[in-house]
Image (cartoon, rainbow, N blue to C red; front, side, top):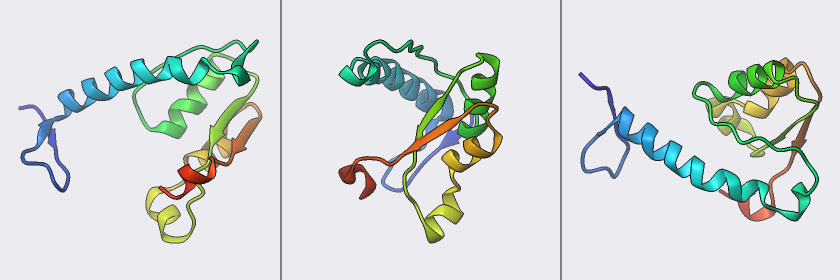
Length: 112
């Protein structure tokens, strides 16, 4: 049996393997665009896709790769949103073995 997942508005649930494959394909297309910017010029950047809980994987990979600095965006959730969804950035700050820079997303992204 293949586990499935669904959400409101779906006509039928999709196997988790299909969703994982779609997410990986999307990440592989989008990641290079993130590092092809003027702000990244001269920086050593490595693209890496891992599976698992975001904060613990970021902390694990940072320690394993001996990174100098983790830069992470905060979605700026407060109140109930923060309680329900937690804070990846906060967990990374608490557990990372290196400095962590938390940046605020641009105004248009904060509204989402």
